[in-house]
Image (tube, rainbow, N blue to C red; front, side, top):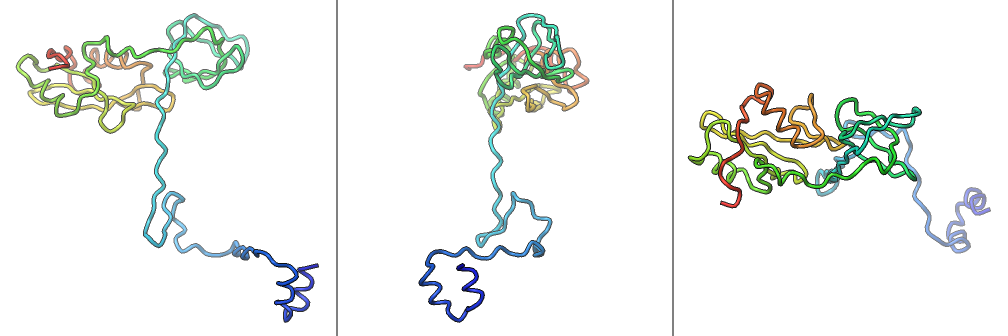
Length: 226
């Protein structure tokens, strides 16, 4: 009724406003309106104060699991694993977990929950792991007289707390290689080759120095706390 009265007798607008008070929403703009910058992305919206970029959500560190036993899939929904396989658990489903392999075929499927276990921080046991030291400290340690070419260490990345860096001495200089994490928790320096654990990555590049470009011979000789 309100719409009919307003359209038939617009001259009585004040009367209609008195009869039907309340907030009236503005008209929706025509969908054929041309945007001044059609190439603009949603992450860059121009406002009166300038361009504003929406910050990228911080990536949560991925928890890594290991298969405790061999398991053969009995249907298409299940995942075959071998003891020691590294997995990323996506969700719990009753007595099963939906898991995804972090290396190799990257397949996903259901596994009995009691067949997997969370891997704790295993890096501290390695002599090459120096934890939370910065680039300058790493270079000072590696260039000390106790170390020669081929000395190396692994440290937590200064810019990404859930990633790591290999610092290695070669020809009297120190080179740094960022170890990134994939969305399923795998470790990699090159996106062509990933590993389930940090230890596996280091061992591979120790045996294949050409892949990294420098030799990883011995862990840094000077102790971490010096």
